[in-house]
Amino acid sequence: MNSNPKKRSALGKGLSALLENTETDITSKSSNAGVVGSVSMLPIESIEANPFNPRTNFEKSALDELSQSIAVHGIIQPLTVRKLGRDKYQLISGERRFRASQLAGLTEVPAYIRVANDQTMLEMALVENIQREDLNAIEVALSYQRLIEECSLTQDQLSQKIAKSRSSITNHMRLLKLPADIQAAVRDNVVSMGHARALVSAGDEALQMSIFARIVEDGLSVRDAEALIKAGYVEPRNEDTVARKSTPKMAVSETQYVFKEHLGDKLSARVDIKKSALGGGKIIVNFNSEVDLNRIIEILNR
View (cartoon, rainbow, N blue to C red):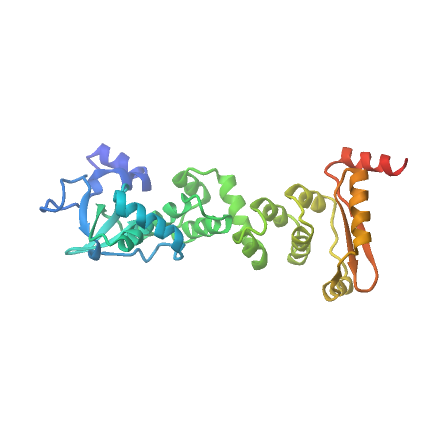
């Protein structure tokens, strides 16, 4: 049995305890390092990047901006590293600050020195990654997946580690079941996470892709997409789909455009005209609610 209750309690808290508990420091008391628990100045050339960092792409403009700030103000938040051997360290967290410091020409950087095994390194890197504000929903979902699969965590354990609800974790991870094209669209901000969540419940992949095309083509809101799915949207027959993809859209004439605008003003609604090269097409009157639809119908029935 552990005779030190305080230490047992701290370690039981998991990742946050490892980062905050000074008992895990191995900071040396050399001339260039403070006492245990303090920040040490380390030669930047003695630090290597974290191979477990899930983020490998760093936007150049953002790094340049951070580099300029560091050149003026220095590093406000120290890096966290682990000691590999004599005068050799590996990053646990703070890779953007580390790279920006290199760009700024710093020769040494402030750092906490911690003890961490490889799994803890991966956990730390992934948890720090999740806390970033600029991550998209797919990147967050992939980080959740890696924490669960590679660190042998349950969703409940992950929820406790990152202080996120289990439903939020589940909703993100469900996005990874979507076709790659839709995941890429979420990543590139073509569609929102709300659209993606609606598509998860749409059914099989073919139907998901068909509704996804409607969302992009017609600029459907999340609510519109959810209503389409709830109404039992049916994927067009193959021959219709082929014809639609192979038939170019035709621009409306000036007369048709004037009519579209006039009808839109009369109905107080957005009106679209879509034409095909085969001569057919459709006039689309957009509405925002059941009440709005009834209002438009009443105007047309006058």
